[in-house]
Image (cartoon, rainbow, N blue to C red; front, top):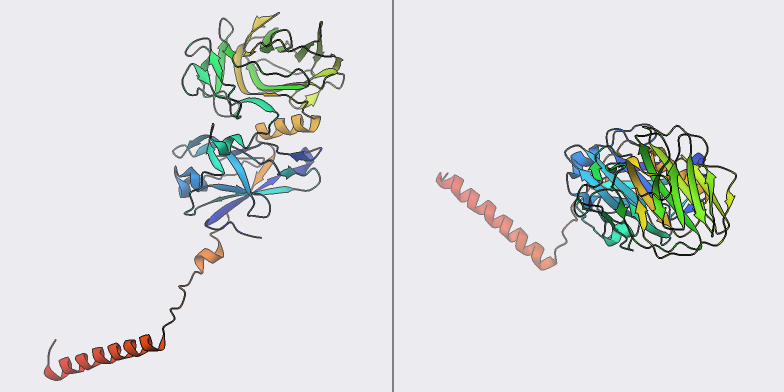
Amino acid sequence: MSWLSGYGKRITLNINSSLITVALTHFPIYVNLSNSSGITGADVTDVFDVVGNNLETVAFTESDGVTRLYCEVVSWNETTKTAELWVSSSTWVISDSTTTTLFLYYGGTVRDSTYIGWVGSAAAEAVWDANFKLVSHMNDDPDTSHIADSTSNGNDGTKTASNEPIIDTGGKIGSCQLFDGLNDLINTADITVNAKATFEAWIKPTALGNYEFIYKNDEFLLRQSSTFFVFFGNDGTWKNDNSPAHSNINNWSYVAGVWDGTVVEAFSNGVGSGTPAAVGAVTDTANHILIGAALFAAAFVGYIDEVRVSDIDRSDAWVGASYETQRDHLITYSTPEPEHPQSRTWKPTPQIFTKKERILIEHREAFKKFIEFLKVKRGIN
């Protein structure tokens, strides 16, 4: 197995193919660095012990050990030894039949921001495919009145006011936003999704009832009910599909609504209803997508995290894998491999001298020995 030059250590990350029902291309993988990571709760804090806050000395590759993957850094805390990273690339394929392996390299001297960077950098934006029109990790960015879009589209969100909603550190992944059900909402952008669409979010309601949490005026909305989630589409008449039954209150749930141009289907924790409702052409209203706002029912009360909007109908396999990776249940982490043998067995390259240089060296050594002889003979210390 090839080793990425300039790095001393690596951790192997194996993706469980049994949770991938169809091969996925350019799929974003959540990499949780902590003392309890992945399916087995592995301790990978050695990364912080070695790297500290020099996160640009971290690299990800495909299974060949050298082909680079892009990495978005959402959070990195060398004190608590935790980090939220997202990894992918446009040509990377995750297999549905065999284990897909990727490598996390660290412990070297290479600093490279081409493939790794904070939200908003070119490297970070390369993690998300062109069909993602909005990806928000629901952190305050750049201030308490806004949230950032991780894609290159710049569909950032503006809150009702500073801290309305307010950030909370108890998100499904890192931080999230807490909505009070009164006037809290986030206004993003007019995102055109009038051919196909997918809406996704993690929600944790703190009140039981009918509460709406993603709304695009006269086009689509996602609603919480007491025992399931509802996805509405409007082709002139509002029509809806209900997700499989699920206990909602005070529990984190991954909710998705998919429209393929002809039907809408609601998903709960990666599983679709199986009985989508017919919804024909939807007219773009040039209205913004609102998070936490309501049309027919009450405004949402509780926590919202990881909001995404795509202008494509994501497959059942994609939605299912999104649920698994976002709950950190898709990857098995190895223990850190020791420093690469080449870095431990390094030897200096032998120096090669010309004939004239060798003669000069020999004369110099002979002269040094003659001086030592005279010192001894004359009793000089």
